[in-house]
Structure formats: structure tokens, C-alpha cells
Image (tube, rainbow, N blue to C red; front, side, top):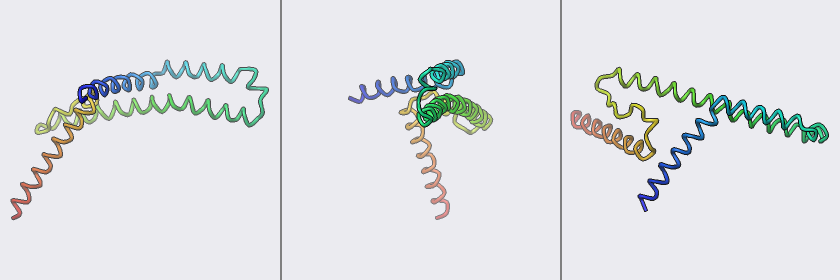
Length: 132
């Protein structure tokens, strides 16, 4: 059962990563913009009530905002990873296991987090022994 869950989790992470990349792509935004403009240029758009037209405009704008926000998040995330990787590599005692952590599976990230919690707990115990 764990094997099935692990396999499903890996597939889901790959799909999520791919979809995130596609939604944050400028070509996808351009296609979405063309689709929204085509939708707004439809004759039905001009014959419906003002409330329906406003609703369609809001819906179209919100739809396009999804792509803009995703592109912004992808860029921010990539820059943050670069900065963190630079900090890790510039600090000699730092563990290089977390470099490119964005490519790790959720299970690997949880395992790394547990290792760091264990390190912190060990340091706290060591300091408590020094105090006593």
C-alpha cells in the first residue's frame, strides 16, 4: 500500500510541477488572452444585460489574473531558490543536501526537515548539559 501511495505521490508531484510551469508560461497567457478577447467579441456579449456583461468581464479578468499570478510566483520562487542556494554554498559548515530542494519529492523534504529538527534538538540538549 505504501508503494502505491509513494508512486501516486511522485506522479502527482510531476503533474503539479508540469501544470505550474504551463500556467506560468507567457505563451499560455497569450493564448488565454486571445480566448478571452474572442469570448468578449462574441455577439452574445453585447446583447446580454449589463450585469451579465460585467460578470463576464470580471470572470475574464480573473481568469487572466491566474496566469499573471502564476508567472510572478514562478519567477519569485526561482529567484528565492537561487538566493538560498548561494547562501548555502557560501557557508562552509552548511549541509549541501538542501541545495536544489525544490526538485525533491515531498517525502524527501519531510525526511530532510526531520533531520534538521533532530540536529536542533541535539544542540539544545548539548547547551542544556553545558548550563548544568
